[in-house]
Length: 194
Image (cartoon, rainbow, N blue to C red; front, side):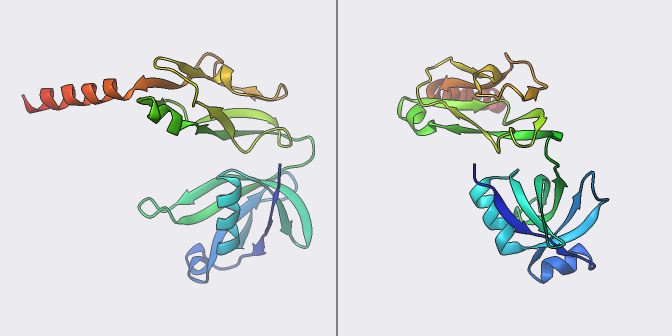
């Protein structure tokens, strides 16, 4: 897995001013340091998110030193989705962390061509493990699924050293017929208009 590199610059100004100047304000914390206000060049940070997802592990250059970090939280503006603030946690070798890992579903086009749709119940799961074994995301291929199939946490390819807090039989998603979905919506609108 490729690890992105980000440079954290010291930040003395308020977040609003940093954003006006083309930066994304943030904070870095961990065992080694207390909460440290930083900023990132907006263009570089957004590129990392596009290429590595919302919760990437990064090689963080801070105070001329390289450290491993995990993007723990991204605060976004609710309407436009602009990144307002980020939190990064420094991770030492062998340190266990707890975080939410997103689930990516592939093969939706194949489902659609069969007249099926994917109903997602859970789009991320909470895991605990060493940062080196926790993936940026879990991938589930739903292209070969059929009507009525249920995708569970058990179906994910989870590293044996990762603990999950959810039950293995918890349903992540259900495959349903697009016709069933349409008829249910029609019934709801008929009931509402009565």
